[in-house]
Amino acid sequence: MTNEFCEDCKSKSEDISAGNVLSLNFMGRAFLGSSNRCSHCGSTERKLFFFMLVPLIPLGTWKVKEAGRGQIFTRKLSADGIADFDTHTIYTPEQQRRWHKRLIIGFVIFFVVVNVVIRVFK
Image (cartoon, rainbow, N blue to C red; front, side, top):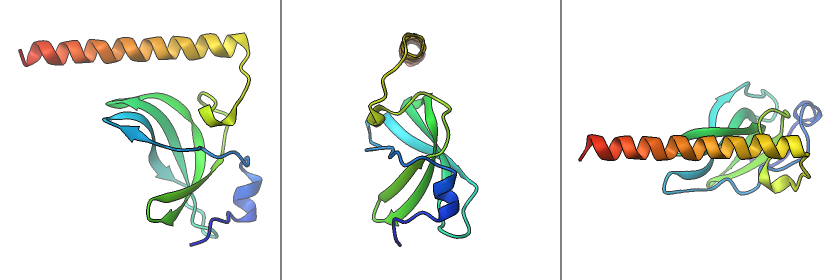
């Protein structure tokens, strides 16, 4: 399989990579779902999420093409979600406030869930 996207997929997406999509101990970034398989190049549209046990923050929609042995090639499909960490985007103050608010809410939800689980199994 080649890493080339077809011209149609290239025209609908930006040449921005998702970078290293890693997770460790149920924390990190991961693609979820799969839709709109391209009949020409075989790529699919997938949502990238930051998660801690559960998906917390959407990081956008990407065209993903698998190249075997766990290797993938990605292109940014839409501007929804928070801009990816690897794009080196400079955020406006409003975007920074929204990002910080989502992080705080995510951590609060995580700690509440952990405390509930601890109390249930105590």
